[in-house]
Amino acid sequence: MTNQQWIDVFKDIGKKMRDELPSIINREGGLVPLGRGAGGDKTFPVDKWAEDIIISALERVHASGESFTLVSEETGIRQFGSGRKRVLADPIDGSNNAKSGIPFFSTSIALLDGDKLSDLSVGYVYHLAVADEFWAIKGEGAYKNGKRIHTSSTEDITIVAYEASSPKTDIPRILPLLQAAKRTRCFGSTALDLSYLASGALSLFATATSSRAFDYAAGMLILLEAGGVITDLAGNAIDAVAVGLERTVPLLACKNRSAHAKALDLLSKK
Image (cartoon, rainbow, N blue to C red):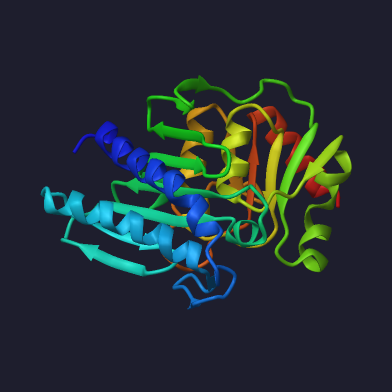
C-alpha cells in the first residue's frame, strides 16, 4: 500500500467514528470505566468503541496482504503478520474530555516504517467533536481539511498550550513559558495541541510529564511537515526514541526554530 492509501484508510476510520459518535457519547453507562488499557490509563466505553473501529479497519488491511504491528493505548501490541511497519494508535486522545462532555478530543493514528520516531511516514489526527481533520505524509506537507497548512513564522510567544497531568509538579517546570505567554491553554489532547500548532494557531506546546509515543507521533509528523520543531524539554532530538507502550520524554514543540530557541532560553533561566 502507498502512504496515500494508508491515509485513505485512516480517513475512513475517522468518518465512521464521527458518524457513530453521538450514540456512543450519550449511551447509558458511558462514564463507567471498563478497566485499564495497556497504556495504563482507565479505559472507558468510548475508548473501546474507537479502538474496535480501528482494529476492524486494520484487519481488512491485513487481509489485503499488508503486514504490520499495532501499538495501541488500549489493546497494547498486536501483530498483523511479521512486517517492520508499525501503526501507533490512540483511539481517543482526550478521553477525559470526551467522558466529561467537553468537545475537545481526537483519534490519533500514525504509520511508521520501523520502530523509531525517525521512521514516521504518515500521521492522521481527527478532531471528533468538530470534524477538523489533519494529516501529513513525510516529505509531502501537512494538511487541515484538505488545505496545506504551515506554522507561524513569527518569533513571539503569544498562545502557549501545555499538558499538566500532575499540576503541582508539572507547572513549575514549564512556568517560564507560561509567564512569557500572552495567553495559555490546557486543552487535554496532545495530538490536537500539536495539530493546531501546525496550523499556526499556537506558538508552542509543552509538557513536563513524559509522554507515550502513541500520544504524539501523528501530531509530531504533522507539525514537522508544517515547518515546526519538536524536541524533548531540554532541546534534545527525539528521532531515536523507540515506539512502544512505555512513557518516553517530556515535549517542547514550537512553531519555528527561532521560537524554539527563545523557549529553551526561557527554560534555562528558571
